[in-house]
Length: 419
Image 1 (cartoon, rainbow, N blue to C red):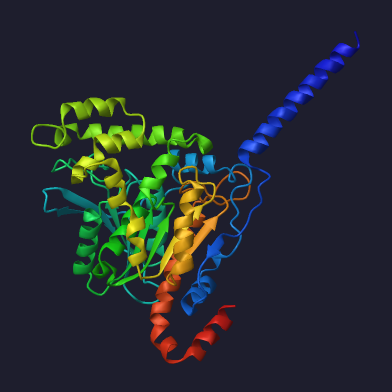
Image 2 (image 1 turned 30 degrees about the vertical axis):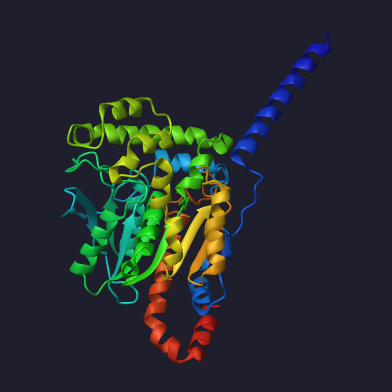
């Protein structure tokens, strides 16, 4: 009889141990923290950038209890966005397109002078179905404004719930028309401004493709930063059907969100005067993946004959090698949306091209990159600080470039002072 309580105590201990084991495994608590893995070529500019933006080479420390889980980082970004999100006030601009569509972007003026005294504008492309009102965008804009940057944020065509489409077309994976229109407006209205190009997730694909499509697109661009993009939609589609890292589940959630955006514009996208048919609408209702939606709807906006053609022509992997301005590519190893096999693309690019730096963090999830001590994250993320820090370094380099070119000794002195 005395053995029964002991047996139950043993079962309780086993249950507690099992729960603790699951928590440790799920939260990845035993994973170490580390500095980003940086791939780059040893050039004067890259050495200067890494010295002037030390956060790139220092240890990234996520919140202790949950920050080492890519799923929780991603979920927190997706549901909450950011902590203590600011409310920057901007002016919405409307740009008519040749096909009858109306591109919109929000313009935010700087809150003070830039540290170099120059006029510098961040031209920003958000992630899939996102716009200037998303919390992570507002946080980044608020931080950039305080650092003296003007910000122009593209609202993806059809993404804003209160803006009607004026043509039977919405944003796609790699269409650069709206972003090009916004950049053209900024160049015309601010003829002396320098441009910092920034893209998040799908927006990273669009900005890299835009810069690589035509070398004139790189004029007045100081640098480009891409965060958490997948580089090749064709290669990514296969990984999105896999269950490892719950990728198939994320695929379903993103497809559901895309369906809601498309259906909110049903009157503009479907009808006798459009490329969509009633059968397409029926197939949209039953779609459970982004690939099914891309096949049924998205590829038809630009007349692609097949899903493969759509993914091939709209992926930046075929254009990014033409980008010659300084390019910072940032990804996270525990991003549940971007399979590790896709990261050979930026790593190989950084090994071959002197203008490219590839930074891979151990943690951060998809557009999470929260920092903090134990539980509560800080308002600014590692991602926000890295982009602005890299931009500041590029602006400083541009300001000092004439003297650096004329005297290499001056450059060595600058590096010594920085060190």
